[in-house]
Image (cartoon, rainbow, N blue to C red; front, side):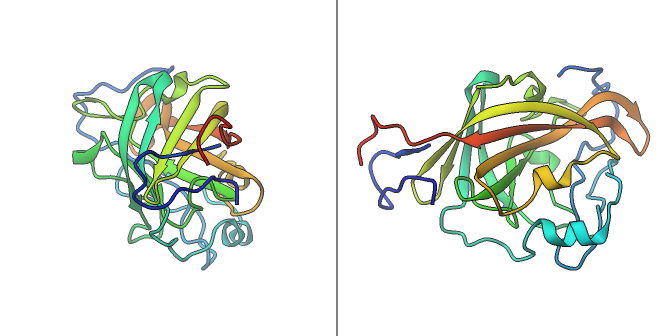
Length: 229
């Protein structure tokens, strides 16, 4: 396993290793992400509560992307820090909405983020997924500045077991609603990686909302040798 361990309840955690046009905040439409739907049953991309949807893709690729069962609570992420964009936010588990798409935190909790509990635990092999709103009708939300991240910026995810998984940003990319790179976003194979996802691009309104989605791709850093073992 890639992350270093500390005993639960240890006094100190050990580390493991917008641009575009904004929507007018007076518009009353809810801002939400729409992500991959039910994987194990082979459904494509669904629609979460809100005006955004991503295009469907072949069912066999969706079925292979991520396990359908929620991950164990031990080690789940509880907080997220992204110093470069001044994000320090709680992380709560989000599952699937009634239509099979990924749920997101409610707009009343737009300063919080959601870890998709059918993705891997941050710091474990595979790609962990954390989602957040970009804004609401009242103003900026937790991932408003996600598009400003640059390669090398650090992301720290504190877990319920006391570990802190530290990632470095590889890239931040915009994708049209019909261009979701699902194989790069989901899956429990490969090295430990993290995906932060929100909406972005130009505000076009209607059922589309923002034209794009913004994804920060990050890779787990090696353990810090200065940390006690």
